[in-house]
Structure formats: structure tokens, C-alpha cells
Length: 246
Image 1: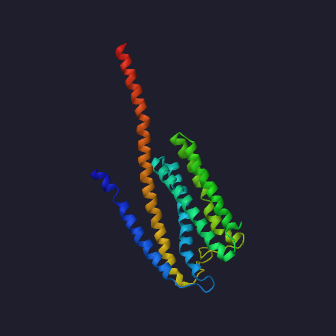
Image 2: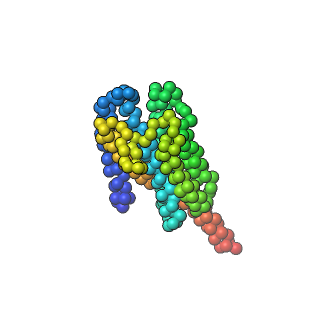
Image 3: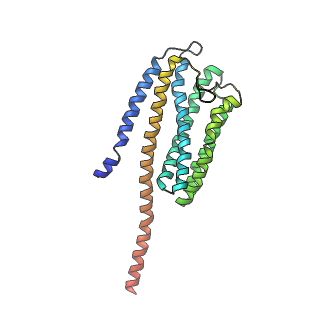
């Protein structure tokens, strides 16, 4: 019990740090001045952009952990890849919902088949298939290999989705923070601090959720292994009894 408590000491620290950062970011976001054109709607940016960033981070983690599994064959990397994929799907849904709430008053509709929106929706298909494959394959090693390949290939979504607004111009605005061709901040400078704090908060939130989900996945894996070993032990015991009787 003492060793288990020591190993899990980081989880509550990450949780507390995440909560502090989120509260600070929300306070900065709610007290930010209204935009000249969008008014108070601009405050949706402080949640929508970090949510999209977290989905990128999670999908990147799925590919990275999957690659590490293929190289090392360590099951913990497979568990982390699965956990990261689940987090990515969750926050992609949150990104789409937040974007729809922002789109209705600005575009007049909740959804258009813009390149950015379409590729975001397609990511749910890709990573939904990733999770589906994991549920369909019983053999743990084969399941880990196949899903790792899907996770690595799926990371191509990140640059395609990020550059979609540049490659295929549509109604979606260009990147708030442009990283290529010289870093460029596309929003008013007054919003920079709030968005930075929220982005850092969501990054720490990802680490916290990844750790919690990874711990749960490890416990579930150990329980499944015990349940698998129990019938074998019972069969072995019956065979031994039969041999003694003979």
C-alpha cells in the first residue's frame, strides 16, 4: 500500500495544478474586453482554440505512444496510446460543439462543409475506427500492433487540419497563431495572455487525464489477466485430481 501511494503521488498534484490554471484562465477569459466586431462572442476563442489544441496533442500522443510500442513492445505504451486516443475523440467532439456555437451567430448556420470543419469531422471517423479496432481484436499483441499502425498514420490529420484553412480557403478564419513562414499572432494582443494561460491549462489537463486513464487501463489489464489465468489454474487442478484418482 505504501509503494502504491508513492507511485500515484503525481496524480493529485497534476489535478490541483490543472484546476488552478483553469480557474486563472477562465477569470482572464471572462474579464477580457469585448471584440469590436464579435463582441462578447470572442470569449469563445479562449475555450475553442485550447480544446482544438488538446485534440491535436492527444492525437499526436496516440501516434507517438503507438510508435514507441512498435519499437519497444512494452504494453504500457499501448495503454497510453489508447488513453490518448480516447481523450482526442472526446475533445474533438468538444471542439466541434464549441465551433458550432460560435458559427451560428457569426456565419448564420451551425455547420458548413468547410475544409477545416470537414477534416475535423473525418478525424472522428479515423480515431473512432482506431477505438473500434481495439474492441474487435481479442489478442492483446495483435490488437496493439494494428492499432499502433493506425495511430501513427492517423497523425497525418494534424498538419492537414492545421493547414486546411491555408490550402483550401473557406469561411473558417485562418490560424490565430501562425507557426509557418514566421510566427504571427492573428488576434488582438490583449487576448494573448488569456489564451496562453488557457492553452497551458489544457495541456496540463491532457497530462492529468492521460495519467488517470492510463492507471485505469493498467488496472483493467491486470484484472483481465487474472480472470484469464483463473480458468487455466482450475483446469490444471482438475487434471491433477484426475491423475491422482487414476
